[in-house]
Length: 510
Image (cartoon, rainbow, N blue to C red; front, side):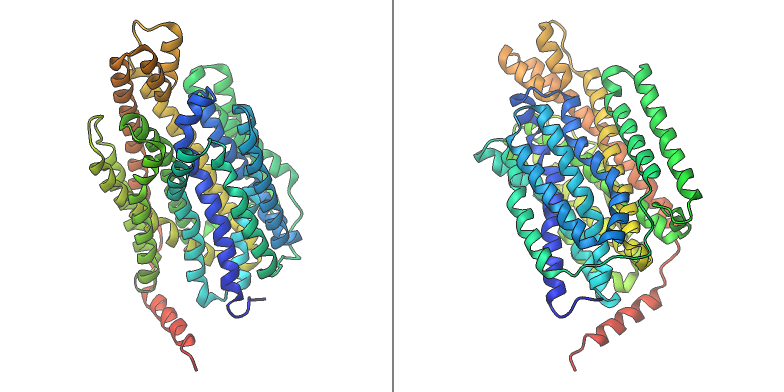
C-alpha cells in the first residue's frame, strides 16, 4: 500500500536523516585516526580494524537483514537496527581503549546492517513508480552526502570535544529519525519470503571475515605467512561455496538469477566502484591533509568541502538529466570523471599546496554523484517488488563488502609503500617502530626527537603511498567505465522521455 499525501515524503525525510547518520559515521572516524593513534596508541593495523570492524559486520548482515525484513516486517527491523546503532554509538563514546572501540564499532555495524537494506526496501512500498526516481535520488544523496560531511563534522567535534564525541553525535540523530519512522512509515512485508538461510549466512559471514582479516594483516605479518595465506584462501573458498550453495536453493537468500539482467549487473558494479573509491579516498586523504599539510582536524574537514560541492552538483544534474539521457550515459560520464579526479590526485607531491587538492576533489565528488545516484536508481527499478528486501540486501552487501575490501586492500598498499620508503636509519628501536607503523607515529617520534629529517621522510613516504592507492582507484574506475560503456545495454531514450512526460502530465494539478 502506497503512502498517502505528504506523509510519505516526511517519512522519506526520516529515512534520509538516519542514512545521513550512517553516511557520516562511515567517514567521521577518518579525521580522528591521527588523534586516536596518538591518544589510544593505536597502530595502523588497529586503525584499520576500527574502520573495518564496522564495515565488515555491516556488510555481512545485509543479506539476512533484507530477508528478515521481507519476512517479519521491514519497519519493525528498521527500528530495531536504529536502537542497536544508537546504543552502540553511546558505548563507543565511553570506550577506554582500542579494543572497546572496535567492539562498539562492530555492534554499530549490526545496527547499520539492519538499517541500510530495510530503508531501501521500504521505498517501493510507499512511492508509486512515477515518484520513485526522485525518492531514490533523495535516499542515495542522503547517504552519499554524509560521507564527505563526516570529516567536516568530525573535525569540528575534535576541535572542541574529546574523540568520543564523534560517536556520541549519532545518538540524538538516530533517536529523532527513529521517532519519525515509528509514526510516519507504514509496515510492509512479503508473506511469501523464504526462511532465513542459516548455512548461507554462516558461509558468507565467515568468508568475509577471513578474507578481510588476511588482506588487513598481510602487510604486517607478510604475504607468505601461513596464517595470511590460509585466511585469504579460506575466505575465497567459503564465499565460493556460499554462491554454489545459494544456486541450489529454490528460494535463495542471494538470488543469483538477478545477475542475468545485464542492466542490473553493471549498475551494481558501477555503484560498488563508486563506494570503493569513496572509502579508499576518505581513508588516506585526511591523514595527508593533517600530517603532511599540517592542518588541524577541523581544517581537514573544511578542506574536504570541495568534494561535497561536487557531489551535490552531480546529484542535481542526475535528477535533471536522467529523463533526457537515461541512466547509462550519466553512469559512464561519472566513472570517467572519477578516473580523471583520482589520476590527478595521484600526481600529488609532498610540497604541493592545497589548491591542486581542492580541484581534483571537485572532479572526484562530481564523478561520485553522477555514478552512484543513477546506478542505485537503476538497480531499484530492476528489482521485482516482492524481492525488495532481499534484492536491496544483495546490492548493499556487494557495495559495502567492496568498501571493506577496498579499505583493507588500499590500506595495505599504502602501508607497504610507506614502510618501504620511510627512512628510520639511526633511530632508537621504539621510535623506528613507531615511525614505520604510521605517519602519525612518525610525526610524534620526530617531535620527541626534534628530528625534522624523519618528519620530511615520513611525509614523502606517505604521499608516495597515497599516490599509489589513488592510481589504483583511477585504473579501477576507468576499467569499470569502459566495461559499462561496452556491455550495459543502451538506454531506450524514447521510452524514458515518454515515461517522464507521462509522469509530468500526471502531476499537473486538475
